Amino acid sequence: MIILIDSGNSRIKVGWLLNKDGSIHREPHAAIFDNLNIKSLSQWLECLPKKPNYALGVNVAGKHRENIIEYELNNIDCKIEWVIAQERTSLLINKYKNHDQLGADRWAAMLGIVEKQKKTHPPLIVASFGTATTIDIISPNNIFVGGIILPGSFMMRQSLTNGTANLPMSSGESSDFPLDTINSINSGISSAQSGALVRQCIVTFREYNQFPIIYVTGGVWPEIEKETRQLINGIKFRGEKKTEIIYENRPVLDGLAIMARNIL
Image 1 (cartoon, rainbow, N blue to C red):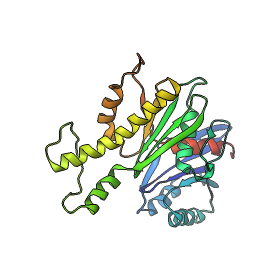
Image 2: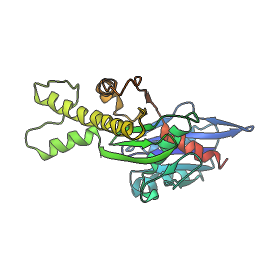
Image 3: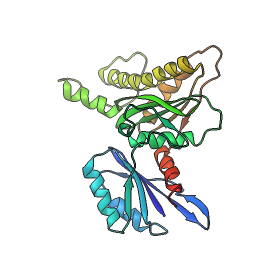
Image 4: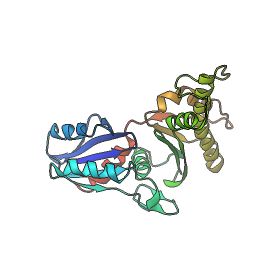
């Protein structure tokens, strides 16, 4: 059994891959733990149906978090390999100027998405709405051609609260014509997040003359889903059909599972 670990800035998501009688099995549901409650990881490890002998992971939460996870795995004699982005695989080519500087979580998520595609497919967008927001573009011939990074919703709210004297920390609904401060903040942040995705859709269409399939993930997605779908569906591109927006619960773990299959 191989453990799969997606260590984000706020949460840790874990799963597993098991070769049983020549057949590959995955966890039915990913487990999610708060970064401040690392003991939940050790409890989850104790409840596994089989003792793991290896782990593959990505970590964007710093060296200290990496050390804590390694300590928990060492307690059960499980070695972990921390994945970095590669220049190319059989599934995907990485065009980042320094390929290993691309976030490993972004790379793994894109691998997980690309493997689900048919041989011929339109361009793809992989958008992750978490502590930070990343929106990455994959060409129809499976080349990662670039992506953008911006602060996530919470970071935007936090910056307004910390950087001004009178703007409060807020959350809630957005509207087209806000008439109070809280609603103005919520609407502005939702517009920034959904607008960034719309911009990348327009850029992608201009480059490939095809509207992309959009894959979204991350804990903030429900907060901006309504406005994003309205904006995307309102774009008219020369008779193109309404675009697909598909939510993926664990694309990073899916990408790690692809790598892990080569180890089993």
